[in-house]
Image: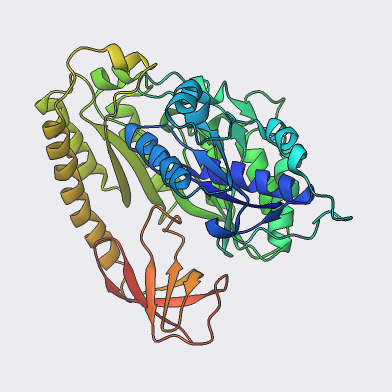
Amino acid sequence: MKNFTVITLGCPKNTVDSRHLINELTAEGFLYVEEFKKADFVFINTCCFINDAKEESIDEILTAAKFKTDRLLIVFGCLSKRYGDELKKEIPEIDALFGVDETGKILNYMKQFKEYSGKKLQEFQYTAEPPTYRYIKIAEGCSRRCSFCIIPEVRGPFRSIEPEKILKEAEKFISSGIKELILVAQDITQYGKDLKGYGLPELLKDLCSISGDFWVRLLYLYPTEIDEAIIQTVAENDKIVKYLDIPMQHSEERILRLMGRRGTRKDYLKKIRQIREAIPGVTLRSTFIVGFPTETEDEFQRLVDFIEELQFDRLGVFKYSREEGTKAYSLKGQIPESVKNRRFDEIMKRQALISLEKNRALVGKNFDALIDYVDADMAMARLYCHAPEIDGVVILENVSNLKAGEKLKLLITEAYEYDLKGVIVS
């Protein structure tokens, strides 16, 4: 009894947590398997950021419980931290529950089942992640108090991860052939605020000094904290892809204040202009929330106008999710779901047109690309302007002799709303 699998839900930070757990368990002699039916232990890493994420986590737990047979079901992560007592009561098939950042407790729990085979599986390679990229978590928790977000309560205050640990992990990935490092945290612009004289620009420069042909991608930058040093570092280092994910959440100051967010519409417009002037060809992604309590029709339309004006290359929209334990939960003026749905649809339809126009501008141009997936007659690649799992892809047809993980040059031949088609440049 030593095989285990890990089902990961939620954000890339959970992907990193699952990877670390897998590495720790395999070092202790347990064997990772990808197939549920081959596992003696089923771990589910859960999310509770919004209601949809909670429902997905619960559905996954119930499915695993249904087919449990003689397997052990172990649930950990954000949902367990927040709703542990309820999960124990409602789903008794769960054998053990752990919260966030409790790998040590999980290892202690697993020791009672350990079978000593005479050697540890030190050479094991975790293969569930794609061969092209790896997420690297550079900080834990969050100290901001956005009124709609439960993350600070679940993951605790912001803590930077030591640069030595980050750089060691990065070097390991690059030496193994990984072509892209994706830095993630709740807000990577805060990195180093709790360290002495070492911040995000310094970390980026150290990462870029690692030898090898690879990309560095930045996700989740707080808009008002993107300073000149960060912008200059991105602009000057070729290994850093010219892609910034800047969640703004809204454009109107009254709503931003209710959300507990800093900045104003004027601040955001100025910041985007500054970034585009300093980093030619930069791809900008943002996310917004529609249907926040008391959001008027006029404020929503001004948000739409803001999005039209800035012409983001990539855009994500969330319908406000009323989460227990957040400041916004008790706000009056909750918006009906039908109104949230209409506002969501309107923005997404407009963004689809913007995205199509942006993609059409790429047709006829050559780009470096990473191959993420290959099957018998089709491959999927990404350009610098595509973050994995959230943006579109480049579809390659009638391919042969390609391998996932390769880097090559493509000519873009066709454009759609979110995806592209291309051919390999000989």
